[in-house]
Amino acid sequence: GGILTLSANASSGATTLYGTLADATVTDDETGYKSGTFSISSAVSLTTSAAATAKSAQINYSSGYSNGATELTVDSLGAALSSGDVIQFGNGALFTLSAAASASATTLTGTLSGGALADDEVGYLVQSITVSSNSENFTTGDRIRFASGGILTLTADPSSGATTLTGALSYDLASGEATVSRTEAFLSGQVFY
Image (spheres, one colour):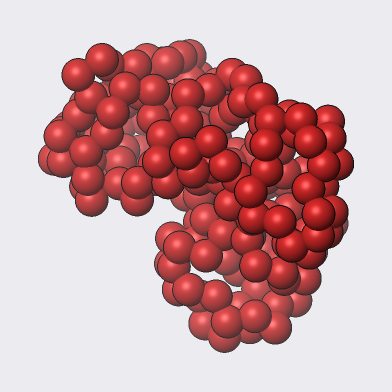
């Protein structure tokens, strides 16, 4: 995914950050970003119980894809994907793989559902993240931001207090990594993924 480097400080409670976005093109409602601004998730207090590796796919087809497409051309994958894996894009569209794709593959085979995709849209692997404890009531679409800058966008409603959360992860998480509050101040030069 892209990297947003702040060009100005942001006060506590800010929901818009200004800076330079590198290594990606941003589309409306992309996980973690929206039209050049960064959407900060609500304040929560969670700590991961195990590390998690984010995997992504970026569309590389100027005409884009319609809902129902069965093959996607993407930039070279950074990591292998398995048959049955689901990639969620920023507009909520899902691509479910029907065949494995090796690291460096440029074609994904499966089914696109829930919307169309434009060139350069980025999607993230849907996976389950385990946290040590949870007193929150989350719903599908909630975004949980971790200290590394990674964002988990929930793709399923967990039960109240669930310690396994399923969603699209935008950046690797370390074991024991904590979430960050939307009330923290952000400093010029801080980086988000």
